[in-house]
Amino acid sequence: MDKETYIYDSSDDIENIKLTDEEMEIAAAKLWNLNDEERKAIMPNLTPMQKRFIRTMMKGGFENYRVIQEVVSARNCPRQAKVGGKMVYSAMVEIRPDDCDAFPVTGYCTQAMMAMLNHAYLISDRLQAGLNPDPEGINYVRCPHMSPAEGGIGSVLFKVYCIEVDEKDKADKEKMKQFLSMPKK
Image 1 (spheres, rainbow, N blue to C red):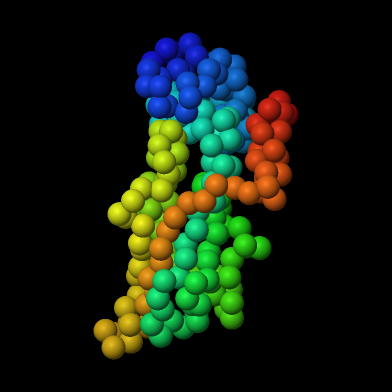
Image 2 (image 1 turned 120 degrees about the vertical axis):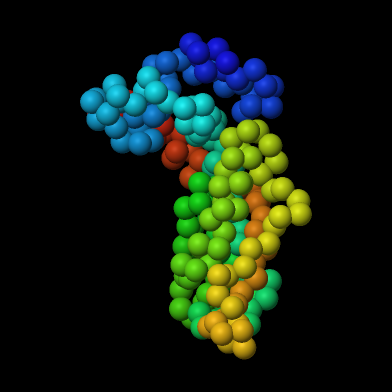
């Protein structure tokens, strides 16, 4: 890796985005809301993972995808999960409430969100590595609860997958791009 511009040797790594030390520092300060003291302490010690995260943000890689958690089956779910309903997240796992319909009666379910947390990290890591964020074969997660017959309070199985953003989501991508390019006050 070239330490001056943070270019990784792998051609698969986010299309080799070149960021100067100053650009990396500005982006990090904006993303993590660092004050001058924090920035001076943190910037010299950024890990390769943190640098890759910043580079992915600067490319807009997270804004290119939505993560879908779709209800495949529901057994006695007290939140009344709807088969075919979806919980929708940004690729940084920020819930998109206006796009969600998996739990139409009670709203969201934190247990459902918790169930896909590890999968969300996998998707994020694959995006940062420039890989297909939708790995085949590991696309299902289950609510941590069991059915009442098993001593629990209800169980839901979800399929988790990514989709590329459509035209209405392009505005979100543009907002993030503008945010990252503004100097930190």
